[in-house]
Length: 458
Image (cartoon, rainbow, N blue to C red; front, side, top):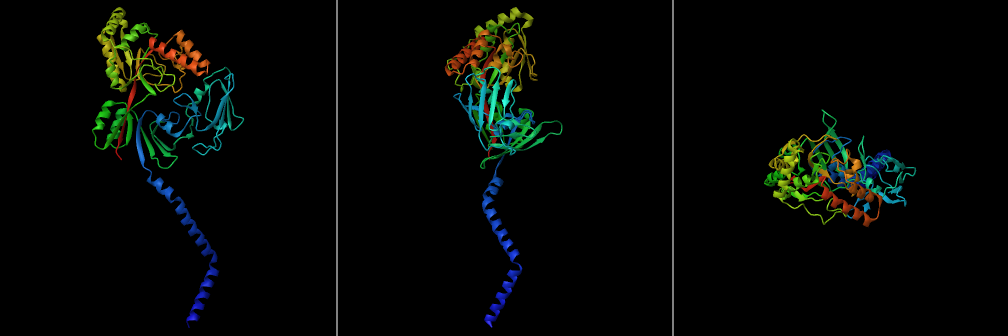
């Protein structure tokens, strides 16, 4: 009886399998596939789900043509970038060379690279355009720049971030832009979201605010987790909060400067400029940052380490200012253009002028592009390349040379620097330029600002 039941069960199972063999096989394959996929993707899925999100507050305007520098530095790279020692390096260029005449520069692209939108990175897709420079992209793996005139420092112009807009396309960054939300009232973005290329880093969510006051309020309201400021009062205030971490460091890629309009009848006198600069108490500047003496970063290989801060002698400088202002009479009236971020320095300069018999008012509305000023206090981004021709050469007055500075000796030094690629000569020309600049004072480099990072403990 037992064997009959066993045979019957065997026949039933065999018949069922024969009838549903494809169903059983496909179910088995699907099950194995699902288990395999789970085992393969589980860690990736879990890690992405576990990625923390950091909401960062920034100020300024943000749209497809003016992404905030904080975002640009995260999502892209440049064709070349400069190391602190002045040498060049690249994440996306295999090799670079030039001819003996410095009129033809060839860059060989690294193979198998893609933009953030998966577009292949080739010579014809590089978002780069320079006036008066021909670009040969006939070879998809080579960028050939052809110049009409020799220029030994052309590589400096290849250090700008590579980013294309509509849509955002970048390469070589640590993050990728996943979304950007616009305000309804204008074309600016108020939120930008980034995700890391490599796992293990947090997702970054940027919120854009009008000014620093809104930024501080947003932090208090828990709208953001972190922001960076140069406001010492905010730093001291949040340092006392138990759930907040504050850090302080120095920024040497920017300098707060007092720009003089050297074409002004009164300010064209170098002694007056020196007296105004030398009257600013250094102890007040040291509260805001490290003292600056040069338009170059101290980390530059061309920085002149022999330069020292102007000697303080308030009595002598005060007497000089009084004499000038007395002779100038009604012309000794100054408007100081600045912003709320630099009020301590602006107020100090205002008090110095008034104390010497002059008149001074503050204009906090900012300076329109190409606008005229007498005195301007602001944050200047030091060029990443040592060549400062476009900032101080007399031919650039009304353009990059906002101080209207004119010096034949400085013009010659800047021209000679651009004309050579020999390191020793470059160093000599740039050191001589800094010495002459410190003597002429078209702008007083005041301090490299402290930077305070305020973040919520996580």
